[in-house]
Amino acid sequence: MSHPTRSTRRSAALVLALGVGLLSACSGGDDGAEAADAASTSATSASATTSSAAPESSAAAGTTTAAPAPPATTAPTEAQAQTLTATEGEMYIELSEDTLTPGNYTIEVVNEGNATHDLVVERDGSDVAATENIAPGASATLEVTLEEGDYVFYCSVANHRAMGMETDVTVGA
Ligand SMILES: [Cu+2]
Image (cartoon, rainbow, N blue to C red):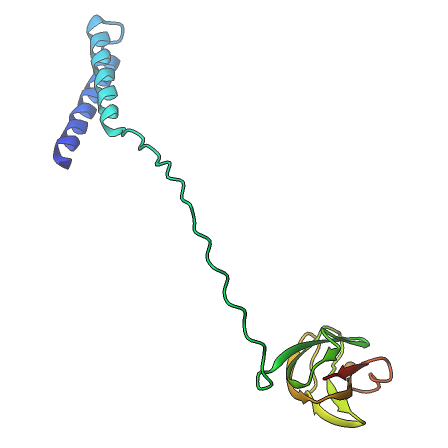
């Protein structure tokens, strides 16, 4: 199917080139005017064969069926660690929550300050868990099991705790 179209275009281009050649060769003459007309007509018909009719847009308005809401996730059991974020800087510790229920926790400790910090979990004056030193801009995770009672989360670097890097945490039933 491509051969007829290709030959048509080739002959049309030949006529066009011939017409232009004649037009430039004998400008102002009657023959030149006729040749130019023939060339333009051939060019028009050649371009008409390449143009295709615009396809009609299908106006099929799709009615999307609403997907059913996913079932509510089951409440975390005690085995599943809950997540908590502790953000540290000079000289503060901010917790995403400070009233917690007993269970296992994964604490994401983010040091957004300009000094090295850490996070220690203390209960009744005894350290329960602690991170390593956390460089400025770095973060660490701390796994800890919290029982019902009163805790203090603090930073053990230098005198940071005395300067305000401690926060009370109440673990209720
Ligand atoms: Cu600190």
